Image (cartoon, rainbow, N blue to C red; front, side, top):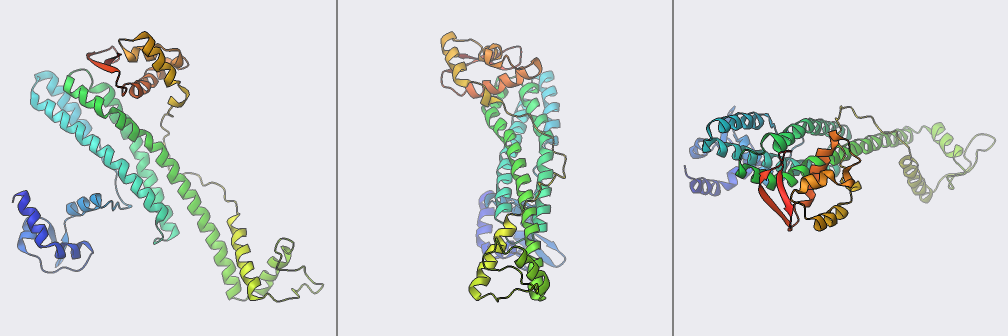
Length: 364
């Protein structure tokens, strides 16, 4: 079947496909829809193929809480294997395979970043789920984001070092996506902080809700003694109540207006309850903190304009702004600054690489 024929088939059966998408019970389906694998029969019922649902959810930004953010191990192993074969044979087939794998990994980074953003937005706006379920879902997402850190470091290091310097077209591709890849990796720290904050706030909301429910049950059960104790002990702050009488009774009854005021005051009181920040239940490996904010980029660029360096990376590495870093950090921090500066239109790339396996760029 050709692509245009598949589009026509989907168009002609749009109502049926939409009914199946909305989880209606479908028992009769045209054979063509089964042959092209749009529908799969399960126990006398026809359901949409999961591959089609994944495509629709991606386009409509309908990300599910149970989403797994991608497995990079297959592409990584294939990259290592094809790199070795290309270096041994110089066969263009293996170079094309490497470029294709790099592009697949870039799409995974891109889609993963978008999916996490949608999941966080859905968590914050979801009012249909029980609070306990929201907390569990947030914990699951935090665990999956945690797993990405190791993959980020492994793939990022291979892009920077393992694939550089043996083919110009591959180097050009890596150079073009390096800034975006770095941004997607750095976003992980922000997502971890947002998820942890959401978990703490949601647990606090659960605690407050339980306290309000407890008070509501007292009122419904007419637990007068407990209510009287609360109102009289807080008479100086709650202006609509009075001190205890000698008989330990409230000597007046609240009007409807006073009851409304009491309700507002109780909500305010429970809102002010301080709940200690919950400890993370997952072991989150902290990524290296970005230190670009303490480096004077403008000064670096001014010095570059004056000296017209023939190798921007070497210039940055030896600049006084980076002398605070030890040898273990210096190359990594210099590369981050290098990525920020090479986007300038005054930068010209050479074909060769320096001893750090980084493409030589000079300032015009």
